[in-house]
Image (cartoon, rainbow, N blue to C red; front, side):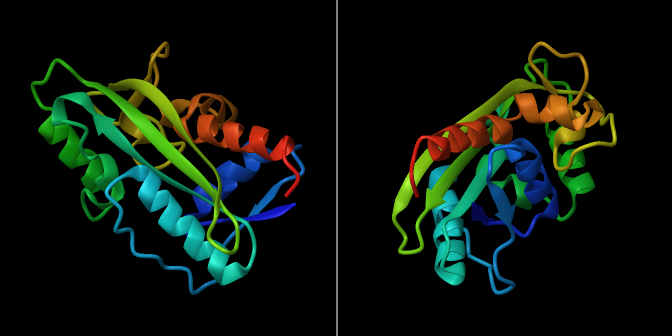
Length: 190
């Protein structure tokens, strides 16, 4: 079964297909005209906005995620604005590390809300996955993307960017949410 993964991020698509391998589900990119405005005030709202737009444009079932890094001492920032915290990945990481300079409490979590939507816009399933950990003092590792070089998950001593894909996908917020979606799909006739 093909499902449109409502993203323009090739890394997210690759990650989703790795997690979904052997499930009978293949995720594909939305049409080129896909460019929804994320006007929601929660991860769930933005996830729905993206999924419903991709489903409408493609005429197929679509899945979207909205995710971000929420740092406790920053009252959950960058949160919903994680991808827009600065112009580039390097600048986002630099800004966050500067804001945490001298902070002892570096607890944080990645949050990922996923919404599965029918072509008519109906929500078929929605779930949220988490990955708790803390922010490192400096970037380390070359795998992954986004804030992975500075996020150390609970029970690990390395950043997500230092992990192999299989380990990352087993513990990540997106992996946790997607596993719940795949379980739903395996128990449902769509």
